[in-house]
Length: 92
Image (cartoon, rainbow, N blue to C red):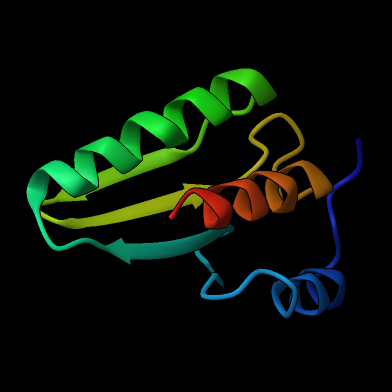
């Protein structure tokens, strides 16, 4: 699987609400009303990631959860990253 070009990444970002491209990853922060709401979301993301065999970086800051995705095996962003971003959006 080949990595996407910068212009392809920018085009694809328009299709995944709230995500941005920074530091070689696509990233989005989700905010919840409570800590446990955020943790419940993390569990759902973990299940989706395991099903896709594609695992994001997840940063938990009380009720703010940042999910960052890249394809380390190709050293960039791929369709697989955007597919996971779309799935994560559906879980929020």
